[in-house]
Image 1 (tube, one colour):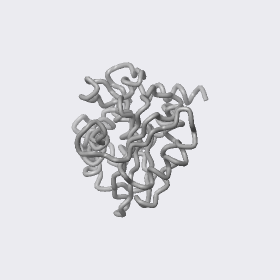
Image 2: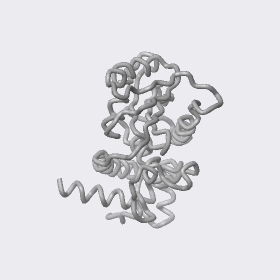
Image 3: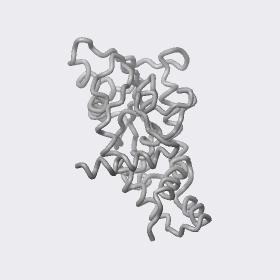
Image 4: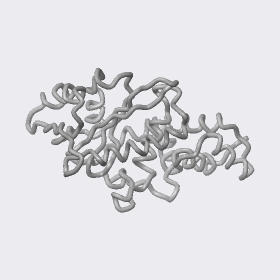
Length: 240
């Protein structure tokens, strides 16, 4: 059965806004589309991979102040940690990686990915007091002078140096994880898909209804942004 692109993008929107695979399957059946919940996962796996390759070629115009934080996630029933890097001004989720441990993790790769995505390093990096961040900062940012990145490690509950923006993003992922009932593997397309959803599809009240991508100067045309992203990604793949 050939499924219309609008059906696939509707399934993706439902899933990333909080529905489980089985609930998405039930919704599609009400529309006369009989597919399994496994098929829905395979759609996400396929198109997230396609969009990821396309979007990694685009440089977001992020600010010079970045935030990093970590949160625990369950993968195959085991506790892992999701390390994330976000732009302070636009809320753009710059980079992420899953780690086995928190305190002993080498966060240098996260910061390096951030530089690759943004095409620059920040002038200010805001984190909590985790030693892994300072170690990675010294290796990835401190050695590059003129200007040298300032690292703000002391995070207060209130004030302009708190990490509330990062905590809100963590809350988004935590709400999504509850429906997922834990992730199945560390390199799951679900986290990448949610990162794309956060950056390019979901409007943010703190950005006056814009997506982080729009705040970074990246325009995704049309009301169905999933469809636009997939179409653009497919065209880019054909050119390659």
